[in-house]
Image 1 (cartoon, rainbow, N blue to C red):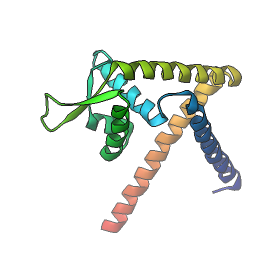
Image 2: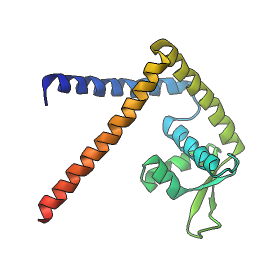
Image 3: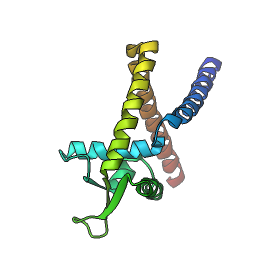
Image 4: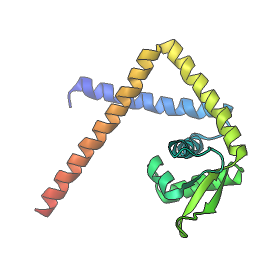
Length: 166
């Protein structure tokens, strides 16, 4: 790796660390932790895509795990915390007797709406300072970087398997 590329990669990793710290300190203004917020957003997205109302629409735990790219155990822990706060409830699936679906309560919806508005205000304020075009470009490039990173890792894993098998 050339020095400039390595130096910029280190800067990006440092910026990522600083962003995570900033989000943690910013969360003191929120009722939901970032993971909880993401889980609630995922439930709402699935409900919206199926044309169902946000509150009381059940989303299977497996769907949440897949959408959040988390293990079922991690999602269970996350949902347990949300359930203890009264933001969601679990129900047995009527479609699959073994399945459990997660439903957002009205209290959960109200808290998520409040936090969502606060996140939205913050992102818009950053966009005003940075320039919305540049912020959107940053998001696009970050998404592209993640996609290419996954592709490179998958290709590398595939080559390793081929070398080990043959």
